[in-house]
Picture 1 (cartoon, rainbow, N blue to C red):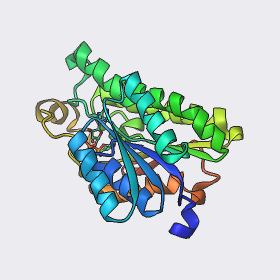
Picture 2 (picture 1 turned 180 degrees about the vertical axis):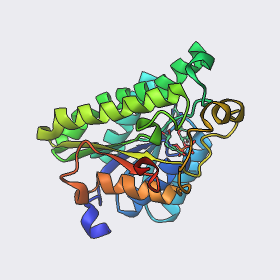
Picture 3 (picture 1 turned 90 degrees about the vertical axis):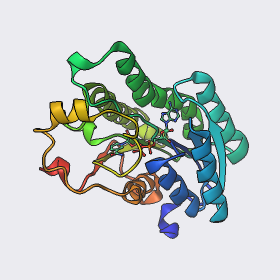
Picture 4 (picture 1 turned 135 degrees about the vertical axis):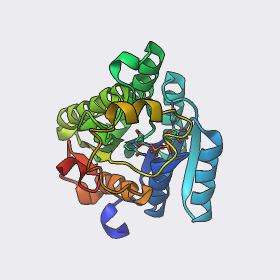
Amino acid sequence: MNSTTGLSGKSVIVTGAGSGIGRTAALLFAAQGARVVLADINAEGTEATAEAIAVAGGTAVTAIGDLSDQEVVDRVVTTAVDACGGIDVLVNNAGIMDRMSAVADIGDEEWERVLRVNLTAPFLLTRAALPHLLATGDGAIVFTASEASLRGSAAGAAYTASKHGIAGLTKSLAVTYRDQGVRTNAIAPGGTTTSITAGLDIESHGVGVLGKYMVNVGRRATTDEQAAAIVFLASAAASNINGVILPVDNGWSAV
Ligand code: NAD
């Protein structure tokens, strides 16, 4: 894969790199020879990712904090520029689940937090990183969208709205910057084994509300399967792929 990805020596920001899909993607970028900025609110998990990359002989730096905070966003960009010499690839992957609630059951706080973390935070980081991505003349942005970007029966209303927003942001960026050397794509994972629902009471919400609609979902993916798709979309092998929301869902979206 190394010869076709063109990622060796590139500067890559991965958000949500302290766990799950983001951690696996960060490890895979580093294995391609990229220098990776690991951005996450979870310091312990992020340090563990950095350690794993170092043990494997790769290069990574960490930027810890809440990405819905502009100060943290600016620090992530500064870290990438100072430690890695710029930004070639931005992976907007960090996200949180809702409680899989219907509209009537969502309080203002849950709605605002989910939209802030899942949609506004990636917007803030993309806006801050864009001048650097444009400066490369060959930049790539990859979002982790969701099956909930494609249908109304994969999560609660807040998460679904946030991830449909990511699909729109992906397409808008793809069109706006396609003649300026920045491609933008997204993966849309189906159910994937990570810790994203840990500590959430989704049984009393999602199963009751969405249970009868959540059919034919296919087998759960591994984080390796999602990370491979992220790295592909960021790589030179995807040089004419722009504005795609790529399902990585064992065919759920095809049912
Ligand atoms: P995860 O919980 O293992 O990883 C998410 C990471 O994002 C965590 O390390 C967390 O600390 C970080 N994070 C959360 N809020 C943050 C914030 N405000 N600032 C900085 N970092 C923050 O879960 P995952 O499944 O690997 O999730 C990654 C992405 O995949 C998310 O965008 C999620 O919506 C999406 N996704 C997951 C699934 C699934 O089934 N696991 C399905 C579809 C989409």
